[in-house]
Image (cartoon, rainbow, N blue to C red; front, side):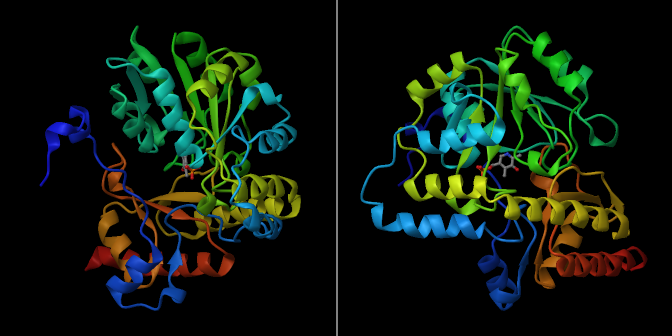
Length: 366
Ligand SMILES: *Cc1c(COP(=O)(O)O)cnc(C)c1O
């Protein structure tokens, strides 16, 4: 028997997070061999995890009867070396950066607070904020789906607690100018959360702002460039005063011991990181040049393809039948119905993707 009156009322109106499709789901639906299905729908690292991280994790496996350190301090030290920021500005998080967002919303949001959400963007911000009582204020994108800074400022009010900025943005791949982020940081009385999940693939990062402003938090993850999505770990960069408050309410022990040691190893594996970055950069250039539809300029490990006048739904379905999972962006607010997000694959995978887009082009005349 279902008893909705026992659930917080706001949850009834929250739309579920829509994850990318899984290999097993698609293989069974279309009668395909799972080993032949290519997953380019969730922006994972197509080169796999760092071999050094895998080895570290295996060596940790016999010690999982023991709790890890409550604050993952060994991992925080390694992140400090990687980012060049003091440990006083770093919080490790699990599960993933999503866990950081969840803890932050519990820390910051009281019922009635507003959060500003430029769209289209990563949808978990809205879920985490609204579950804690926030009112979501959406902002339409400007030309070419770039965040419209003056519209973002217009949406900021006395009640704004958090402004969410994603750079490179998911699903557009576009980056923000540092001057615009500074402008917003100085304009709002609230916190600015900058999501840098894809920062390793981009030509810029904003981590230096963390020691300059008292109202910025940067979210990072091991799920993308470091290839550890299955381990579920991320981290936050924030002013020291915020870290002290954050640590009071963060779930204790939220990064598992295998994740801590794998993260440290992944940060030290410069070879794997470099390969992952150059493969994504070369691949996205190839896809941008070769896909016979409009492809938005991207600074991430994915590209956004506009198949108008075709429907994203139809093209995504055609890819699935061919055993390639890509992301239909209809579940992103204000993304319309003709956008597809494609993770940059290996060269061989990218060639297949281009070939299938070529076939899809003929849908027009059907
Ligand atoms: C993948 C992704 C995340 C979540 O990362 P996890 O660490 O796996 O939770 C956060 N933000 C954006 C924009 C992402 O694309």
